[in-house]
Image 1: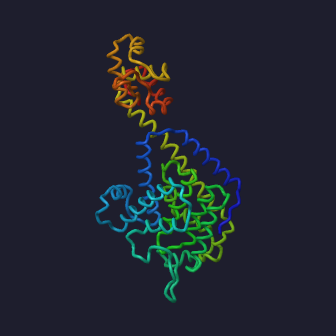
Image 2 (image 1 turned 45 degrees about the horizontal axis):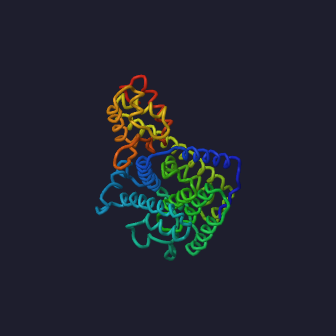
Image 3 (image 1 turned 30 degrees about the horizontal axis):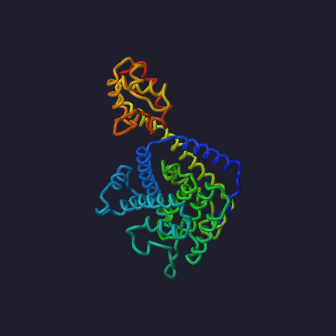
Length: 377
């Protein structure tokens, strides 16, 4: 079992990731934008994780396959990316329920990953025929790159991993890194080990509050340099599991790599979250004309609670009907909402969207204030 000592470098990574976690938590995002970002992130993860395993589909093809009617026939590369997407959806639901890490969860995820494969590919691997060695072979040389533990040791190794996850006091980021390493190293299945490991390390992050709202793809960063990814897992150790990979002498090699990827990924999540808010606000304001923007800016500067068309019309020296017409546009575009009494509009108040994005909206409206007929760019 991999054992990790905290170093200054590891603590530095954890601190930076925690900062990004807090930064993302302060960004309020509408449900529609968050849902769109999450779906795109799952597609990116499905593409990247399968790319690591040699899947030939382009990112555009992956997008098309995931959106295709599920009743249609899929070629193996297409089935692989769809399987990963379905596994992400499955784990998202499990994370909402805070389901404990378990052997059943590991087996269920691999079953999703290998959906459509032959029966012997699903579930824990068994004994090899006499004279045959189960190993991960180099596709070019034919030599064994890695010789995993014997099949008879797999159940005990998985039980040890499950117990560790559910009882350890280690930081969740460390736990996720260890889950990733152990599942790849134990290699409990004939196929799907890498994808299952990436999915379940992501689950550990998510269930412990480091999933960054499902936005962004950690797998994308593993896929940037597949060579570095594998070298970090192997840590320069011999090919045989029992010759050091069961208890690596320098686990910080893998832990540092894993945390560095999480930091890069969390940086990207901050960027995506902030940019999406700006784009949403800019898009919403683009539907308003100059006078409507002027009214919204005035209301946000002078009112915190509800307001009536009559009191606002006096400030603008226009008719009550004019203000009502402009407010109807603000209502239509989600900036304000009417307060009804006996099926009649008594007054108005700001919508949740406006309150949640008050600072960004004010900045954007102030830029447009000098030229009222131009939208906020």
